Length: 188
Image 1 (cartoon, rainbow, N blue to C red):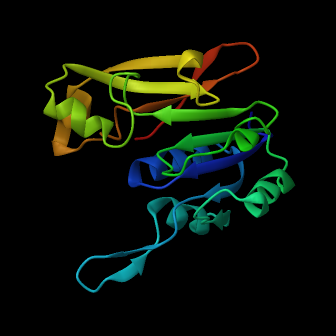
Image 2: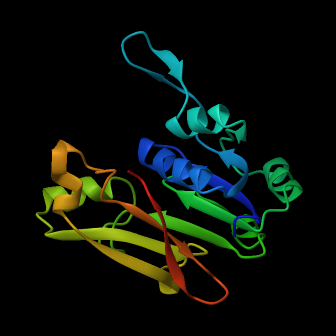
């Protein structure tokens, strides 16, 4: 997959960590889509997402659309992506974009679906006393098409008072064609 063209879509810090791993492992990220800068903190200054910061640092083209109109659909198709990886992006992605890439889209969700769908799955797992949580990787954003689910003991998220313990989390290389999964370099 390293030579295939990948578009990455994500916004929060946890997404930026996954983007960093892909970059570190020499994946060909041709473009990044993330939420537009938002006003934050006391000064209400515009702040770019962590994903945008990482992408720009690595000279990757960044787009911050507020919706997926025809212009954005055409932009995505102009990249001719082989795969789109989505993690906590924040916008609903229409079917024409989901179905466009040769290998489809993969959504990385930090819970064992369908238990905690939507935003804040780690926080909901904490609040509800879940003993274990994990990562679900879904092909084409269809719940019935879950490609892989990794169970991670819940203490992994709590060690060092961090919800994302970088030394414990791992990314995998799912091969969509063969169904085989191989580990990549760790986040730590």
